[in-house]
Amino acid sequence: MAETVVAGIPTSDFKITGTLHYSHDESLIKSDRDETPTVDYSLLYSNDLDQRAEALQHLAKACEDYGFFYLINGVPEDVVAEALKALSDFFNQTTLDEKGEYKKKNPTDRVRWFSNYNSEENRECLKVVAHPQYHCPSKPAHLRETLGEYLKRSHEVELGLARALSKILGMEETFIEKASKLQAGFDVTSVNFYPPSSQSKGPVGLADHTDPGLFVSLIQDVNGGLQILSQKGKWISVKIPPNAIFINFGDQIEFLTNGRYKSNVHHVVLENNKVSRISIGTLHGPALEASIAPDPEFVNQSHPPAFPGMTYKEYLEFNGFDEIDVQSSITQLRFYGLHGKHDIQVGKGALVPLISFTNKGLKRIGKDGNIIGSTWWQLGCLVLIRRIDKEEKDAIGEADYVLQGKNSIKGGKGALIPLISLCSKGLKRIEKDGKHGWEHMETNGVPCACIEAPPPVG
Image 1 (tube, helix red, strand yellow):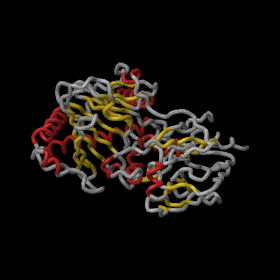
Image 2 (cartoon, one colour):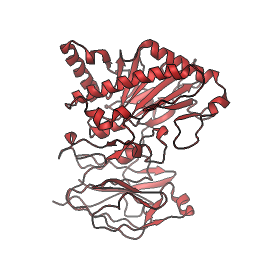
Image 3 (cartoon, helix red, strand yellow):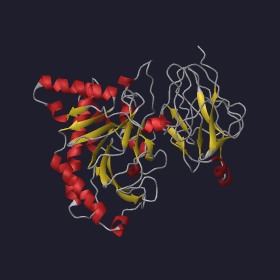
Image 4 (cartoon, rainbow, N blue to C red):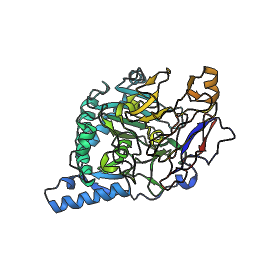
């Protein structure tokens, strides 16, 4: 497998290999019909063993072929309806000053509200930490109880789904629960309120992204806007049936299963909705202190570890976000094991990949210039780092550090080297057949290119 490193400020040695983006052309915005499978939660725990086995097989196919599905008979209909009504009262009956009490204050916020009415998104958003401790705005008075009941039922479904997923993966029933420490799982509920809009359908209001956590559960009072990218590369409009919950896999399921189950890209397309609508999405995550990495059962010579191990807290804060932001970092953390010997020559002014993977886990250099954890690659190489000043930083964009002079990074046979750069918004990995999957991109107008090292030896 050839080795590639992301670098910046290209020189003549760099080879640009294409453009990386999720295209928003009309062919993608015009989505396919909704072919999302439906899973009956009650049948997963039926007393009829044949019925239960059939339901588990159906769940397994939905997970393998899609990674998302509609779940019925999970949370009672009246519990869902009351939660949606109480949240509608929050957005429509509380004043801006009352909601403004929950604007961002500090990184440890457990309730946060913001409005994007002046942007293309055109929405209000309320985020609350739902588990292990439940937090909620104080007004309206009935919100705490009604939303709390829905979130309690959702967490019960989360545990049940985790056990069912463990079974279909061929593991013991409590595999995911134990690996993720789900009894103390960090769940964040994000409630979006979209007012009536006369804007034509088409522009993407909430850009392509994946979600952290094991999976996301979503309910809406009115369907509209959400599209998910299928494994066949087609956008599917999500139209949640009455009394159903939409389930979508998150990043940590992809981590844990080493890519067997995928975290699905999705976005929201603005629609000409005549009435307001509310969506409640809960990101069901591991405990903050739970360390999530590819389980050995999913790692072999053909499937080396695709991700480093790290705690969920480290993951949520990886790109400088707060825990309650629940922002994905999966694109920056994908890597492949490299075999043979490689030399990577990076000239002066190249952006440093600010991440290393040693036998102790993921390590990086903090914004203050101090090394977090251990040193860089333990491969006998010296990496010289200098802090750039504000003028340089403004000139090159988001990167914090540059390499000084010529440097070589040598990896022996079997070495794991994550070639990742924080200067990049999104990256592609090297494919298993050795083809180059990294592509050219731009961050804040600064070109970021790829260079190719010699092919593996031996």
